Amino acid sequence: MRRLILLYLMVLGFFSEKMLHAQDPQFSQFYAAPLYINPAFTGASEYTRFGVNYRNQWPNLQASFNTFSFYADHYIPKYNSGIGMIITTDREGAAGLTSTTIGFSYAYQLQISENLAFRPGIQYSFVGRNAGFQDLVFANQIDPVSGAIDRTITDPSVANSDLRVSFGDLSIGGILFSRNLFLGAAVQHLTEPNQSLIDGQSPLQQRLTIHGGYKIYLGSGPLRRDLTYTYAERSITPVFQYKQQGQFSQLDVGAFLHLEPINFGLQYRGLPFKPFENFPNNEALIFTLGVTTNNFNIGYSFDFTLSKLGIDAGGAHEFSMSYLLNFNKPVKVPRSRWKIPCPKN
Figure 1 (tube, rainbow, N blue to C red):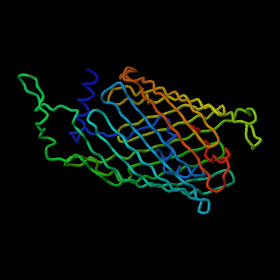
Figure 2 (cartoon, rainbow, N blue to C red; figure 1 turned 30 degrees about the vertical axis):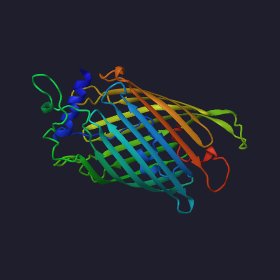
Figure 3 (cartoon, rainbow, N blue to C red; figure 1 turned 60 degrees about the vertical axis):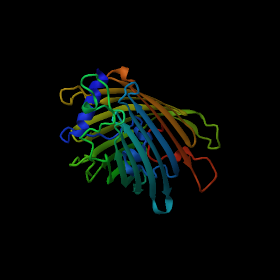
Figure 4 (cartoon, one colour; figure 1 turned 180 degrees about the horizontal axis):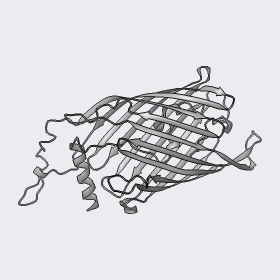
């Protein structure tokens, strides 16, 4: 019954302009998806960086959500600038609504003082969306006597629509950071482009994201087994991310413990004091485990569902991976070059 209700609401929301409140995909390991949450992160590693993110939400339901993202960025020291590209695909629910986004971003690093910098960034994206209804059954396809399904009958609501749309999209953002503190904000879908797959208007509402944290060093670990003659890092980094899109809002808050090379994270997602249409806004507890080397990061997280949907839906599994390259010198990337003190998983 829960699956039927979820499917019913998705179909209604898809075809009714008044009920359509589309939300962007989200990543629990949001700092492992830097170009996705804020274009100002472009080139922030000050090297060439490649990364992938994958999220599978509610895998036990037919109406699951799958998101994959690949990004690459490069820092140009001569111009204090970063350039990057991100490709994101997202498949939503049983209706098979698929979105593909290809974005190009630029950021400039402005050194305000010896220990304070600001990075503004901008991203322009090409977005394509389409829906496939091969897995759905419409009322006029069901024989009222026998109950047999005839998929050769086309539902009139989609008969004259190609169910595809493409549009351009613009995002901006900025990050202010020091050796320990970082605070950023971004606005996606600045022009609110029309995303309707059928005749009519359905603007993609702006998404505001505010994120930040503070790294607290806990002393030194053992000497690293490399040629730097420095100690392994021991730190804890409290972080937060606030998201608002239309009438929906959410807060991620938690902390990451880094015992080099291992990372542990625990976060809470929700806004219990701000319910949505009388539903409590308690979504998930997020557990994260990661490993960081000189130039390679890998992480896994699991969302334990706290909402009424329950853990029977399967929660959410998420994987992230990034790799740093230095084309100037064939040496390992020193950890000291991670300028923004974000969690490393």
